[in-house]
Image (cartoon, rainbow, N blue to C red):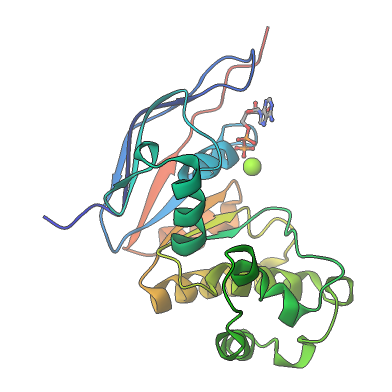
Length: 224
Ligand code: ADP
Ligand code: MG
């Protein structure tokens, strides 16, 4: 039996005094990608943060490529995240004072490693960003900034690539291109892609693929 790419059981998360967000169990085989669907507020971003080990579940277990996240100490979890995980967040968090190229150094710098400029150049080239590598983030189009965020997520060759609402600010053509880049980026690393979206365009395109599993999050009850 190949190790499942991702699985979770009995997963719940609670923000402060709010009621629990409960997630249905999931087992995703290696080689599959995951589309998390659900209305705004259904818990998609929360689930991504749990998968990234940025939040700890109130109850339940998560395994990523056979690694139980709750078995890691906070320090081990940070190292695990840096080495295994690429995250394209909804708000891109590019460092405004750093050029595109220097933004790609950050995943190494944060881990106390020397930057891999050759790899950065290759990724920038593959993503059509070579010409803008010296620009600052505010000098980029939305689509370019999103590709820089993708390059930064891929640079350390993650095994798990998470993307939160990657189409949020993109038109139809750029949405299709972004999904292809995410899928190609994951394929080039042998990585599992987990994509959270409430966008019907994303569901339509991802739903056409036999290697994508869709997991729906129910709409949460409104607080009283
Ligand atoms: P989605 O990404 O599907 O829009 P979220 O995971 O962002 O959903 O949010 C799920 C629920 O948790 C929502 O009801 C939201 O208001 C709540 N929530 C999210 N972040 C916090 C927070 N930091 N504190 C309290 N409640 C939060
Ligand atoms: Mg969200």
